[in-house]
Length: 244
Image (cartoon, rainbow, N blue to C red; front, top):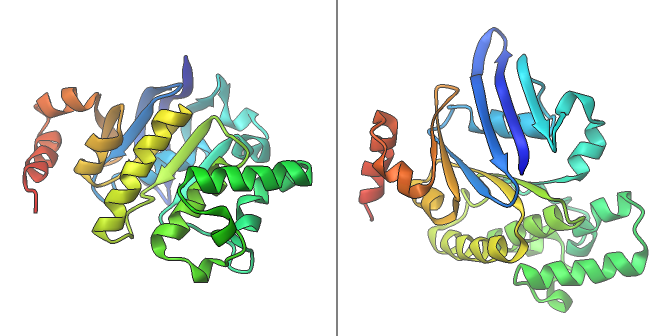
């Protein structure tokens, strides 16, 4: 079953084509990794899904419905969004940050408190130790875990992740990749994950979509990607062979 469909999508800004002729399907329960160099259109593609951007041409469908036919707020409340900078509210505690969307959806207080505890445990943070802390009292890895918990708070079926581990040190990054892989298996969400890191793509992706100059030039399983003869895929595979 398809969760997201791109149908001949183009997006242009200031007469510059940022993505062109994107046509592909993201299936329910899979993790599709959008891989590519900086400026290739990965983040633009992600933002077209949650209606932060509107296609210049073509159509993006979420659950079979064009994003322009959705109420933007209702659409975004069905989509978790995790970015590299995390974006936690600095004057909110960890618990308050996680509770933002459930509160907007008028959940009962007891249900929200229970969900906060459940999610902190899920992302590996001890609830009693962390729920009353503020973002400045957390490490980078802890903030990113809270960001993931916040994105999952209202149990959205779709999760968008834009280089979520890119700003972390290598050790923390590997730890969070492992945690994410565990969550992925446990929760079965549909996930679109943006990265420029070929190792991360192979660790986390059900399928890898390679982007170059605003186009999707390759899409397949990690095994299929490894056999690709496309020059950009070969360049990334060569980089993968260098394990420093």
